[in-house]
Length: 317
Image (cartoon, rainbow, N blue to C red; front, side, top):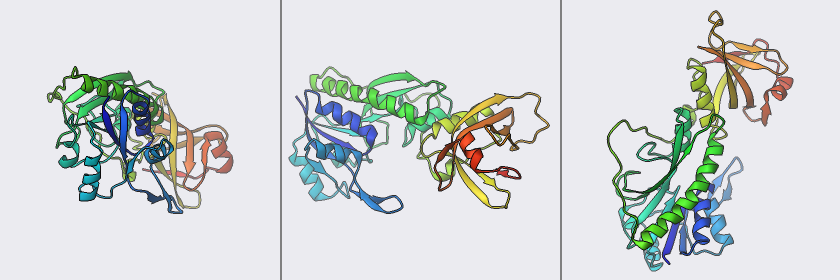
């Protein structure tokens, strides 16, 4: 039985923490981010990992700075054999090198592809047909440590960031425990990440990255919307009949090929004002199926069209 310190923040990490708690190993400490004010009301909230730790009476650390001497002292006092990291912060060497078996991370891609903060989003956006989860030993370079275990899964045409996130979280919980067991037994041999070929990155996605480029092909736009749904969500800008610019989030679209529509300009809005809203792209039409006006609730397209008359609206792109 190994003594484990777990480090993580969001719901994705909770799955792995729960798996370790229910394994043959002992969670002797949990490290997560400090409580932060969030939302319009700036209500102070804690991470999903903290909620789980409190509910299961696990020792908890919430350092502001990972190099703080008091935090490092508290961490050493836990006398852990291994640190496990899932969706946390970049660790300094004095942290990841502390336990006798080192520190490993669970990453939501098949490394070395999609190193970075948003691997699930970018795999779908780029039209990949396969992704997975990887455990690897931490070193001084982000997401470049030796691989321990990997497991793959297809990306289906119906997958969104949400569905793939949930599937990878479930895969990750079992992979984490298998990795701990392998390190405990000494049977698991780390292997260097392959460095040949083109590597696709997964940088953090900002609001400015979410605007739909209507000049792209229909399939590319569909993948873009799926990869950002439901969060942070693809966006489009429209000018209403009064000349006011409106910002909308787009959660679901469908592509219709239309080879004989070249005379219709890209960006044209076509609607029956009842159940159909489509926008002309280079090789056909994008049907907008689920969307949300800024500051309003999410709507199916028929609900949206009952509330907004799109006569004289124009797309900004």
